[in-house]
Image (tube, rainbow, N blue to C red; front, side, top):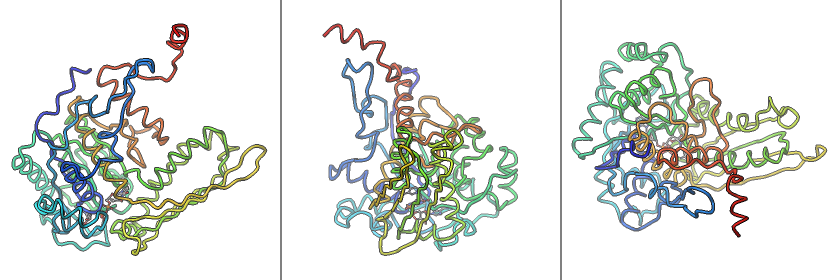
Length: 441
Ligand SMILES: NC(=O)c1ccc[n+]([C@@H]2O[C@H](COP(=O)([O-])OP(=O)(O)OC[C@H]3O[C@@H](n4cnc5c(N)ncnc54)[C@H](O)[C@@H]3O)[C@@H](O)[C@H]2O)c1
């Protein structure tokens, strides 16, 4: 397999629909890291190690030294937004990073201006930007995005491009017959069908060009048969959906631990307050519904109440998000978890996570961009389940249960990298060499 992975030669273009808090925190962060002003903390591709071979071999290189990934110096950023603020202005408005840090990289950030967005207010009611493409049909809008990608590739001399959706969460929609096949999808683009969301138009344009696409929001986007089929047809990796940060990250760390100890859970109440633009968009019930569906599935999949009715059959799971402007991007979450142990005796766990949403999300965008690019160079296409690690609601092949346990997700990710590079997979069995090792002591 190793010899089939193409090298990461030349420049990688990372194109982002939605240059808001997350995207600008990523872009400013990469510029600051390139200048030696900060460290890429939270990014597995930059700071994570991977064990290779037996424990006795003591081989644990950095992931970026093990697999051929694009270097930060070789990345060119671009994107679209419904507001025409350049990245310096957008990052200043987002108020995630200190102005002194942004000032140190001001020229690089000012040079990045958003391209005109594909936008439909019926999908995100709480936004009023004017930097929007106008065309007679959704099909023509898709052609415009294709042109944008090609122009960007030429202007920045990129040898490869990837796209990561960091746009607002769109209203909740169910898959329907227009999403069933490439033909019905393309017909719907021509017909301006209201069931085609803007995010689907970006994803369609990317996939047509063989550009890998990852979805950071909980919208359906490429999680529909038409775009899964298109991804396979054009040999393009896709991954989604909804970056796993804050509260859900904690949930998928903690729930597997309680499950591992066969402790019961009666209730899990999760509430959040946040005051950024994401919070404003999620204040609309239709947009919140998309997020709620994404957040709710996590516990059921980890705990499998149908297999463990005594422990989890009664589980009451509630998730709330409230828009609270004074907190800005510093989301605060509370979890109250009612658990029970030996003989049914009850206990409680309380978590109060004072997190920074975009600080947790930015390294995920970087890792996803680098990994979907790697996947493309390794000849992998379609749904990249090994990237479930990064998502609240991992996209899987139809009929397969998603894996939410973060530790299993990490093992899968690392084993995929080992497999790509021709290394033995690690089963954590150890019996095959333990005896030999003990006898040699
Ligand atoms: N920050 C996190 O921890 C986190 C976690 C999981 C998911 N997400 C999702 O990531 C996305 C970005 O989050 P954020 O905090 O940066 O939000 P944000 O509101 O700051 O940024 C989103 C940007 O997308 C733009 N936008 C909306 N529709 C667009 C379109 N059709 N085309 C181009 N641009 C468009 C908006 O104008 C805005 O600037 C949201 O969907 C959010 O739900 C964020």
